[in-house]
Structures are given as C-alpha cells and as structure tokens.
Amino acid sequence: MATLRLGDTAPDFTAVTSEGTLNFYEYLGDSWGILFSHPADFTPVCTTELGTAAKFKDEFDKRNVKMMALSVDGAASHLEWIKDINETQNTEVNFPIVADVERKVSDLYDMIHPNADNTLTVRSVFIIDPDKKIKLTLTYPASTGRNFYELLRVVDSLQLTANHKVATPANWKNGEKVVVSPAIPTEEAKNIFTKGVEEVKPYLRLTPDPTA
Ligand code: BEZ
Picture 1 (tube, helix red, strand yellow):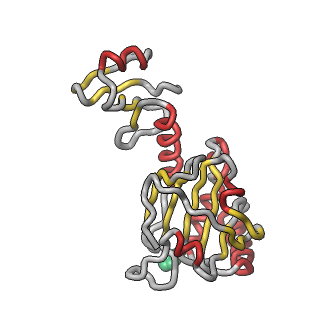
Picture 2 (cartoon, rainbow, N blue to C red):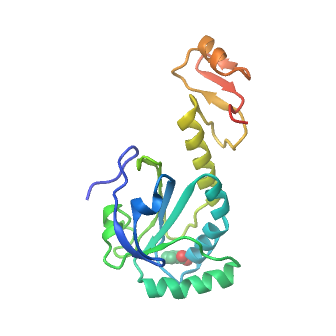
Picture 3 (cartoon, helix red, strand yellow):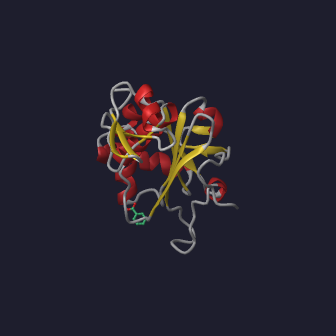
C-alpha cells in the first residue's frame, strides 16, 4: 500500500456504512469530499468529534462538501453509537460512517499506523476536490480531537485558491486579505486585482479577498 500524497487521486471504494452500502465516488458526485477516520465507536473524543461534524454539516453543505467518517467497528455498532452521539452532543448524525471491519478502506488510505496502534485507525483527514484529487491530508493521534473550524478554513482556502491566483497567509480567515501568487509580477497583479495590491516586499504582496 503506497502512501497517499497531495495531488494523488483519492482511491474509490464500495463499503458498508451506517447508511447502507455506498460507493465513495457516487456518494461524492461532483462535490468536494472529506473522508475522516476515528479510532473506535463508544469512545469519548470520537463522540465529540462526530457530534461536532454533524453540527458543522450546514457549513460544509454551503461549500458543497460531503463528509464520510470511518472506523473499523461494524455497522450495528455505528448505529447504536449514533444514538449516543445524538443524545449527548445534542445533534443528529447526518453523514455516513464506514464500517470498515475488514480494514479495506483503512488500508487503501493508510489510516492504520501500527507504531501508534496496531488495530485501530488514527484520526486521518483527506480533503478531496471535485476531480477526486487529494488536496489536504492531516493525521492526528487518538488522544487529540480535531478542530473542525480548521477544516472549514482549509476548504475556504482551497476553494478560493482553486479559482484565483492567490494564496492564503498564516491564520487567514475567510474575507481577510490574501497573498498574490508569487508567479505574478506586481505590475500584472495590479491589473488583475482591481481592489488594490500592497507591496510589502517584492515577493510579499497583499490584496483584498477577490470574492469578498
Ligand atoms: C477517544 O475517542 O476518546 C479515544 C479513542 C481511542 C483512544 C483514545 C481516545
């Protein structure tokens, strides 16, 4: 199994999930996707993560992003656990959770890191664009819950930089100034970015968010 890297095609699969058998590509359609694994059902951090993901679904929907979660527990376990998530996190889990009991998808996406845990998936995240290319990978340990605001922020950056010749600086948030792509000379940038270009250094040029 090869490590998946940025720009690689996200492997397709068909798997049993909490919402029946689904084909990943058919599920995604033309949308962006987030595939994320968690170590195990009925564990505390995972319970808060899946509840948080459910509460963020509206925001991901606005950005045309479909979520799919995964652990190596079975579908019956997922369905029982979803009741607990809904009750304790005050939400409704509204995306499928893959029941990867045979670890086929975990192996495909290299989600089991044996030196961390030989049997359970780590907290992997793959953000996938509509062409099924992997645009972001993240790996968190079992003991650290992920930050879903950060996932939204990355989606905003990816979608902005896919359509405009800009990059987003450290701690950037939607609507803030962005960085002009280094490939564009400043004089040309002034024609492209009509809201203005601030040249801090010849290689560091800022411009207002072109979509704001
Ligand atoms: C948790 O979700 O709380 C958890 C899962 C596996 C190991 C440690 C924590």
